[in-house]
Image (tube, rainbow, N blue to C red; front, side):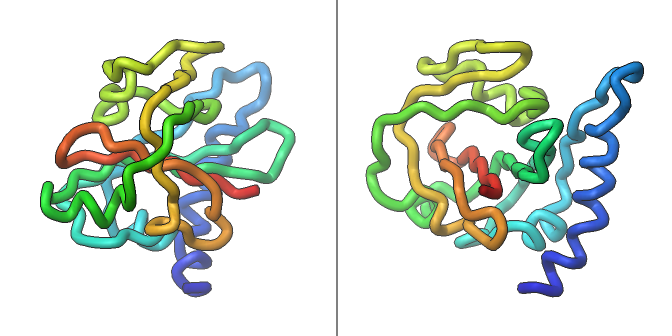
Length: 158
């Protein structure tokens, strides 16, 4: 586990370095990644995933906290492993810098999605815990079922 996290750190630091450009340069933001093996170095996956898009970035410009967001395509029969239990009504706010493009654009089309400051979204719906995904230091977050075969997962450090 520790080796996997250490192996993933160079990619994370490269992404964070891009996000930390000087104030005279525009921030390019996180890039969407489709490397399932690299994602598995950061988080746990409870069953097979057929396709993934994920991105990561800092929670705040001044802090050391960071986040990972992923849209996972899974077999419908495996969905109960990805969204354990019925969930609870709640609101999920996308992190600063997360791009709502590609598979992430599905968040904009949800009935409970509301644009907020900048390019961020606030999404109200049935939120699930992240126990199936949590891997130190990414121990906090939410999972949200987007369709019968797609789930959005957002994890962050403290």
